[in-house]
Length: 59
Image (cartoon, rainbow, N blue to C red; front, top):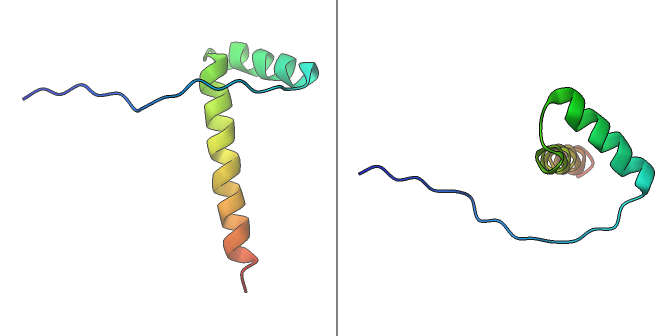
């Protein structure tokens, strides 16, 4: 059976400095991706890096 599923999503509102939003918009436009997609990827990347740092500092 053919199944098409999408990951569960939730809407949240975050306050960000205008300068950061402008930089993100510029990158998103240059990479031809949505701002939403770019923010998700940046957050995932940062969290993965944070997890790596935590493992390296754990002893």
